[in-house]
Length: 118
Image 1 (cartoon, rainbow, N blue to C red):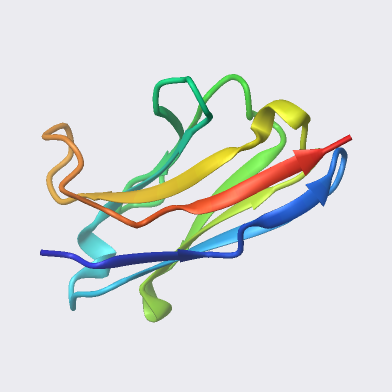
Image 2: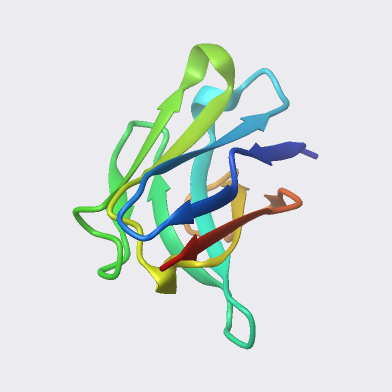
C-alpha cells in the first residue's frame, strides 16, 4: 500500500498563497495518478485537482486559474500551489493516489488543514 503524507497547510489571509506537498512511498511514483481533494465542515469531500502519470491535469471549476497541481517524480512528491485564496477554500486537504486510472483512489493521506481568514 502506498503511504502518503501531506504538509504545508496553515492559516492564511484571503488573497494569499499557500503550497501543499504530498510525499508518497513506493518506487514507482512516476506511474501513479495523483489527486488533491478537500473537505469543508458539513460538506462532502470534493476533487480539487488531479495529475496523471503523463502530467495531464484537471481542475475543479472553483479553483481553475488559482490552483496549480504539479509533480516531482524524483522526489516522489505532488504539490498544490494555491493562490488568490478565498474564505471558501477553507477545508482539510487530502492527497490520494490512483494506481490504475479510472479504478478509484487506493490510498489517502491524513489530511492537512487550510484556513483562509478575512
